[in-house]
Image 1 (cartoon, rainbow, N blue to C red):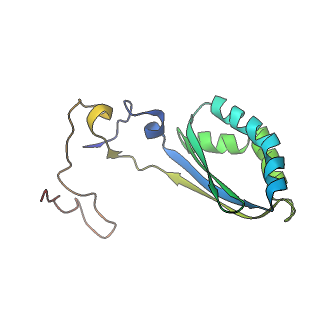
Image 2: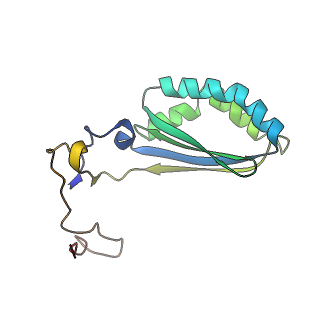
Image 3: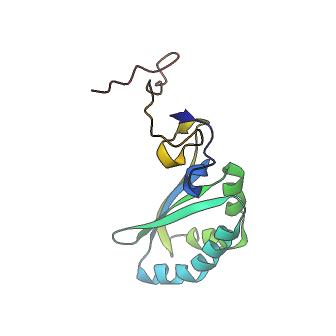
Length: 148
């Protein structure tokens, strides 16, 4: 079911802005030092209006990344301006003594999406969509979904 109403979805499903980022730290000492500001920053982020959900991931040997979801792009950008986030970013980007690389990507949700089952605002039953979402090269609707 295509929908623009995600009011019944969990907080993550209600997000319209997503942050993806990762930083490769210099070594274990940098990661330990990071925690002093990081825990305060996460506490503040969770309290901010528009915060929906986040998850931290690790890649060997010293890369930590974050997926964070917010109500909208403004909520995400307000967080980026917060005191502890600014402090952390100054520390990370202070030459290469703390970190050797990183990236940030910001994504926005399309106005419509998909819902089914318990998270459907229009009712409870599971349902299939009749046509695929069109590609950028396709006019109008996408091709019909084959059930076989």
